[in-house]
Length: 227
Ligand SMILES: C[S@@+](CC[C@H](N)C(=O)[O-])C[C@H]1O[C@@H](n2cnc3c(N)ncnc32)[C@H](O)[C@@H]1O
Image 1: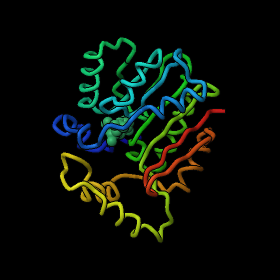
Image 2: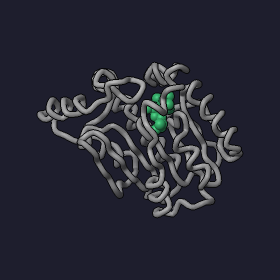
Image 3: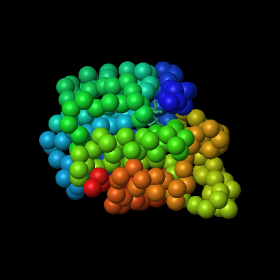
């Protein structure tokens, strides 16, 4: 077993980075995620697990909608921020668990949905597939995985062209966004997978892909259902 903390990205463990995390990464609108979960029968009575929840942008939106949300992350710094925000907002239906994709053990019956955004790429492919299989094991039949990540939707021969285009559109101020240096580090040290490899991995984990949407050949969103 790998040490997930060693693969978590050192910046995610650093309270100073975490304090500026939202400003750097932006404020994704959870409306579409919540709508898609609803379309697949995940209603107000649901239990939802946010895996690698970070500062909890989705967790907090989900806590307004669903009965119970479990926010799982390996980073104490991320969990501290999220715990503070949930307390400020007065939520009593959010649980915090310091654990990872490979170690989280869910007590109780299988859950209605798992959400994970921009984190599965922290794991090398072997462990990513084990993580997907563990996610499948968390879900009830008919349960939904909503997955967002940096996923390479191109062929190897296109890599230079696509990555150059990505780097060219990067932020220049590291406080305001991800820079070309950040992106290059992602390519060198993290484990984004080619789309045409990831999809069989998802299916081998026992999940059915019902929708996939890609932006810029780099960012993918999947809705998957456990049969
Ligand atoms: C880029 S942040 C994304 C956070 C959040 N999901 C979001 O969309 O803002 C990546 C998160 O994954 C967490 N992480 C990294 N490796 C992990 C693992 N193996 N298991 C669980 N969380 C992990 C980090 O601590 C960090 O909070």
